[in-house]
Length: 185
Image 1 (tube, rainbow, N blue to C red):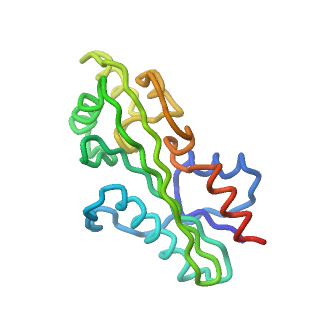
Image 2 (tube, helix red, strand yellow):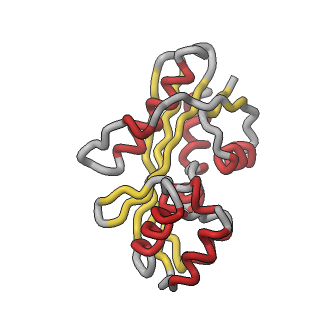
């Protein structure tokens, strides 16, 4: 059986769209206690691996997928905002700039872990005080890395994406599908 170690409806939808049948089990990894490696993008890889391992320890006969997404601007990580003020700060920092979105995936099967990171570049439009506050009022930014959802209303904040759009959403489907097919041979 295939298990997605995530509560994200976006990841569930992306994996479903690939045609896979799977269960979802949310990991108990406390992301706030995980130290950030020197190479910032490796934080999401570390978290993806920890999430997959957390579920795999009780499901050793299954294939477990863990994933994590972060937004990086000028070597600073922007995860989920802690409140509306934090969301405003993030969106204001991202305004009129290009940042990176790193999504890591870790898959465990038969005690072997396979993992990768995919990175996309996202350019924001110049956002006004009103643009940012109107978006925050929708509550969409509150559970998203970087305080925006590419697949939702946050799409209106973006002028350009270079790379795989599903990486920005939270699960790089092209690379994931290829790896899952290789693992299941």
